[in-house]
Length: 308
Image 1 (cartoon, rainbow, N blue to C red):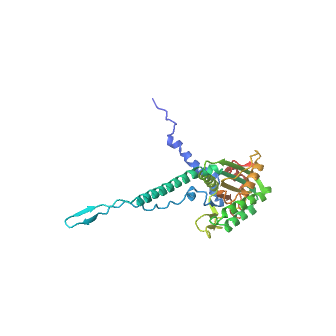
Image 2: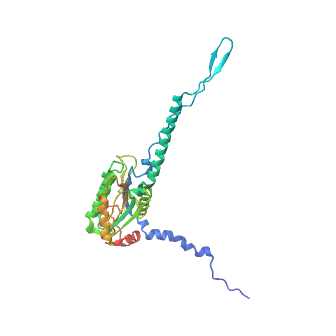
Image 3: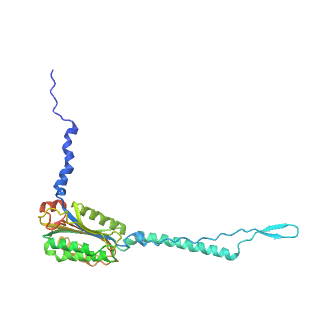
């Protein structure tokens, strides 16, 4: 009897098309279009627990009782004798132990304090995202801020945050979509980590960063602007993300109305002082002159934004 050939294909043949999904996803998200972006930011010196820690000084050497044999000479024999520590040296040894113990206790208490200091100061992370229509002026102003203010300079991060928040407020008439998100943190490190995650997600929406100004240990450098990697011109939208961690800052209760909540958060961020600011990350896209996101690109890249 003749066997009917099977029409079933091996599993590896059927799975081949699935290997193309990552590439198709990248194309749909616009990565192949070379969308550009910009950003600046940094962390204040007092936000890290290590910056609070008191430098541990090297403990003073502790003198130990000495044993110095001396010889008493007589006419017939020499009798060795030992010198015992005097009462004064014992008291000195005890005092040094007390000082060293107090220093170690102070360092331990400082470390414990830093563990809950962020919670005591009300550490929290805030993210504001706004999609602008025709945001060329906003883009140029963000580029000027990155060029003029180095995050390594004292107080520069607070200035960058204030100017960025006020810039977004001044162009409220150009808001199209937006969102605001706030999270309380158990400490400053946790709040800073969340800001870093938000910044990474925002930078992942474009392919090439053409404007950047981040902390690099040099208060006179760090700014980069590449005009040769401009993306495709056209489109409509500019996306701006402000991710901030603060300590001791009070925000107004959320109303449930996105436009009012975004405005309220920006007003609060515009008043953050250097002593309250922990970390700032500002990211925008696109960055090229005349380059904007199409409506489809904006929807795919920023799906959580609500109409304003």
